[in-house]
Length: 101
Image (cartoon, rainbow, N blue to C red; front, side, top):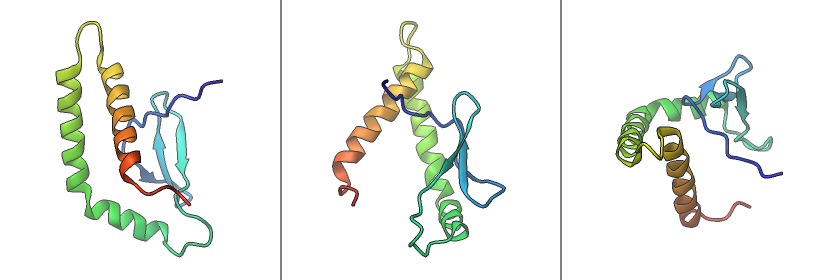
């Protein structure tokens, strides 16, 4: 069975249990498990980093929406444009980052 990528509908937020969560396109909440148990980075510190760089995230979001708007057409709707953008970004960034250990 082919797994489709989950498309977040909003930026991550700190859930009631102190873990990062986000909603997908169907309204299902997902927990982001970024931290390995041995790591000392707390969720508070991670959230603080995210808040510190919120302006950059907002800029990326505006550019993404602009791109979606320009690529969309009657035969290629906004959701398809978003999926193509996310897949293309993931592929491009994946090739630039070191492999996971």
